[in-house]
Each structure stands twice: as C-alpha cells, then as structure tokens.
Amino acid sequence: ESRSFFYFREHFLILSLAIGDLHDQGIAHRDLKVENLLFDKDFNLKVGDFGFAAKFWNNEKGFIPLKGRCGTRKYAAPEIYSKDPYNGAAVDVFSCGVVLFILITGYPPFKEANKNDLLYSKIVAKNYKDFWGFFENGLKVNFSEEFKDLINAMLAFEPSERPNIQDIKGHAWVCGPVLDSEELKESMSVLQEKVDALKDSEKKKRKERAAIKKANKMQEETVNAPLGFSGV
Image (cartoon, rainbow, N blue to C red; front, side, top):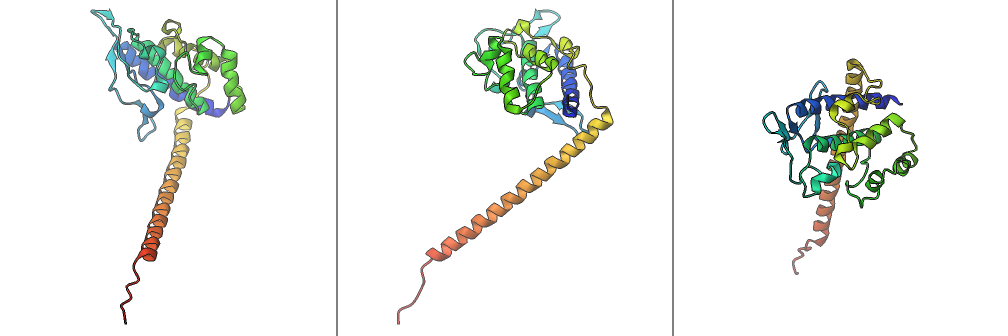
C-alpha cells in the first residue's frame, strides 16, 4: 500500500472512533459524508452537522426503529429510501463505507445505492469482481484484498450483513500501518498549503475574469454610444 493509504487510514480510524462513541450513546448521525468532516487548527478530525441525528437505542425501550428519508443520496444506505423502519447504526456504517471509498479512490462508489444503479447493482448481486474491476481498470491501481473486503461488507445491501463499528475497528485493513501524530500533522500542513494555493489561484482568476468582463462592457458601451455631432 502507498503512504497515502496510511494517511487516510488514520483519518478513517478517528472517524470510526467518533461514530462508535455516538453509537454507544444510542445516537445515529444519518448524514455522514466527506463534506461533514472538519478539521480544527491542529488538524484534529471533527464530525459536523447533526441535523438528522436520532436516537436508535435507549435503556428503557431498547432498539428504536427509525423512519424518514434524510441525508445525502449518494452516501445514503438503500433502506433510507424505503418506507420501512431501519437501523440507524447500520445506516451510519454504510455512509462511512462510502466516505472511506472516496477518501481512498477520489471517486464515489456509485451514483446512488439502489438495485438499478450500474455499479451498486454489482454489490447487490455480490459480483465484486466486476465492481472492483471497473475501478481498478479505470484508475490503474490494485486495491488490497483487505480493503476490498471491508468496503464490500460496509456497503452490503442487507443491513444485517454490515459490520458494526466495533467490528470495523478490529478489521485487518483498519489495523494496518498509520502515520504517527507528527507525520499526520506534517502531511496535513502540506495539504493545507496546496489547498490555500489553489484558493489563491482561483481568486486571482476570478478577479482577472471580472476585469476582462468589465473592460469588454466598457468597450461595448463606447462603441454603441451616440457620436453626439451637432449640425453645422
């Protein structure tokens, strides 16, 4: 595995710990996605946006089935869009699987998790060879069997076939090499510099485009303005 795997494995492990703590309190997030993962000034990972969070367990009632469509479609488990009650913890595990896939590959694993989706239909049918072949051939990379096994399990169509957070934390891929705190901070600092440079470049380009647009408009107004000659 490349060093980038060590980098993203560390972030995924932190995410798993955070969601595990949430599930221990009987709460499901229900809107986990890359856009809701935030970093503080010291590059510590934080999970944000708990607008769809709900209790799926308490000591008095036990398991509480959840209902209602919520979250972001390309991250959402298939049962979210059914009319049946669902397990909030299993929904979070599915979304975490999508997040991990995007972190490692840079692409979503499918458009949405339904049986008619070109790629997710392969997971539903457990045709993992074709699913992974699509990405490995397209990206010119070979993923480890441990990584593929984890993703296959987390994105399972049947909620009962998905691992819980405790299982995920003990999975062979998650237990692989990671960056230490100083290496992680250094990597994040380099990434932040690149992001800032891209932002500055885009800002400069926007200013240049605005200036060109303004100049073109002034030129057009000058050409179309009446000459204003007075008669002799």
